[in-house]
Image (cartoon, rainbow, N blue to C red; front, side, top):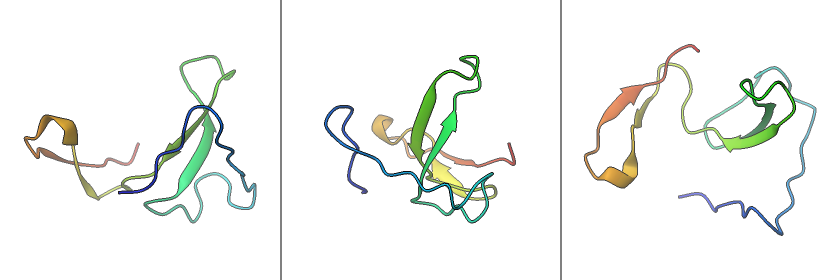
Length: 72
C-alpha cells in the first residue's frame, strides 16, 4: 500500500512536465480540476488503474469484486 497524503500539513509538489494524461502510470499522483464543481476546485488523486486494468471495486467491503477500468 502507498503512503497516504494527509489533508493537513503535507505538501505536494506538482510538475507541469507531463500534461493531459501523457505518460501517467499506476501509482502516480495526478492533479486536475474537478469537473462537477464548475472548474473552481483542484483535486489530487493517486492513479490505481489505467484503461483495460482490473481493480478491486471496494476493498473495504471484503468481497473482492473486480471491475475493469473503462476508457473514460
